[in-house]
Amino acid sequence: MNVYILKTGVRIEPFNEDVHLSVFGNGSILKYLVDTIESLGHKPVIAESDRDFESGAGVIICDRVFVSKKLLRDFLKSIDKSKINMLGVYRSVTSAYNLPIMDVEISRVEDGKEGIFYSCFYHPDCSKLKGIKIEEVESVLKNQATRHITNTREITMDMRLPSIRERQYLMSFPITSSVGGHINHWIHILRLNHLAFGIRWLEYIYTHIPGTASMVLSALRGGIPSSHHDLLKRMNVIDREAEIHPSAYVEASFVGKGAKIGANALVRNSFIGENAEIGDGATVLNCTISDNSYISDATAIIFSTVYPDSSVSNVKIQMSLIGRNTFIHQWCSFLDARFVGDVMVTHKGNTVSSGSPFLGSCIGHNCTMAGKVLIMPGRTIPNNITMVMRPDETISYIPDNLPQNVPLVRDNGTLVPLSRLKGDKK
Image 1 (spheres, rainbow, N blue to C red):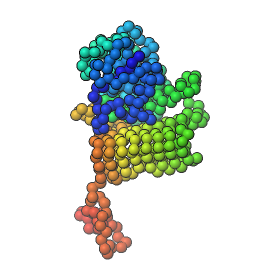
Image 2: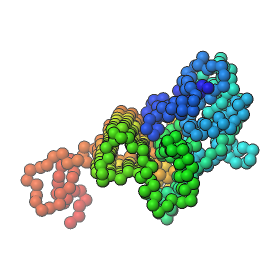
Image 3: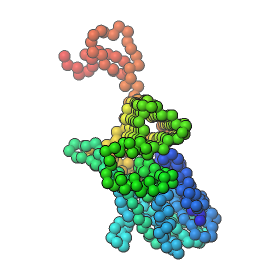
Image 4: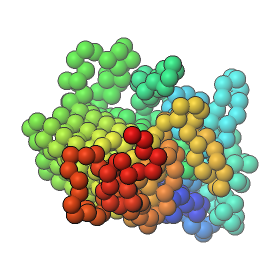
């Protein structure tokens, strides 16, 4: 059966590239979908015009849609194949995790529960789509399709987040391999990668160790045992050509070919791409670090995604998305929380809620973020931008005969005695 990936022309700011090229785990969304389709015994077809549709049953997935292997397989198993069907799931922790700003259809279904429907369709005869303009195919299918809810399973773990004043935050974080969603904004790329480890690890053990996935999920539902770190260390998938220092601690992570992890580094619940390097003493938690990227010594990067060929040298960066071939200096600061309300982001010219009080920023491709650059939460930095500190914030000229043993301060790029500053009171 053909599975058509429908080109919609959607591009995600600030990257300005086709949405299906967005990073997911150790590859792209397109690579993941193609691998998924082929592993299920179907043929992937990029549909750019109505001439690409052939006779016979098929699946049509818009290119801005992510559907995991298990969700697609369960959808195809459970539908009435004599009808056009649209994939839906019940609202859950998983389906709601990435929901803000998403252009999905949300409606009440027969049992009174809320259903979320994605632009993924089954058609019993795709030749009937010939003659329809490619940009109209999605709306035609929506009008004709029966809404079908596919049942999913998930487990959730409560994760403590920083307290803001008297307010305590706990985030319910889902672990499941049944994930769907639309990619309309950079926050969807970021949050989809938060879910990537659970998806790819469960798929890995389903494939390589039959029966283990159900056993582990059953165990986790009963609570994580006191010896869970031993279990998590056994959940690593490490390429034989990766180099990991004996003092590094790695658990529940995928480490690619040629990757290097330095002395005393901590890597947990993360993807480390091919030839990526994690420096000595670095901390990488719940991240995707793509191919050929570098996390420098003592850097802490948490719940973030880094595109290929980038370098991050930062005291701490959280909840952020870093584009391709981008450099982040150690003194560049990403603020990632609001005291009141949710972090706001821009989308199609409007300011909208991200759905969370915790969010960093998105830096485009080919950017350089220098020292003492301070970025407010939820900002989108375009491609090819270089940000530097103000020249008068540096000490560029050291005068001769500076007075000794008196306090000196920076003023307009040089050093002067503190007593000279305007307003100084003796």
